[in-house]
Image (cartoon, rainbow, N blue to C red; front, side):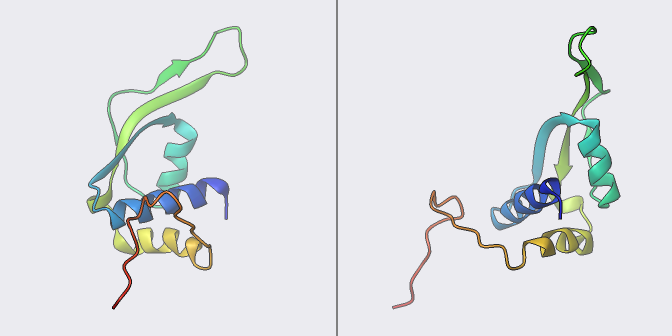
Length: 103
């Protein structure tokens, strides 16, 4: 599992737990291609733009867009998130909400 795969799996899990409709980002085209290989649908907000100094070798093609969570094939999301099986998630900031104890 790649670091990108783990991060996307965590973002999708969080979005599903919180009933989030879309994840919005500005990212490099490498990530857009990665998501396409994972069968994750994305929507662009315009054309990619080149970012960086023309004299620098570190130039990026960036694109703004969204990942509409509800438009995703549930099997592909489940497959990507299955990479989280066995991964401990320690939510000290309570991002996922408080745990409830049964009385």
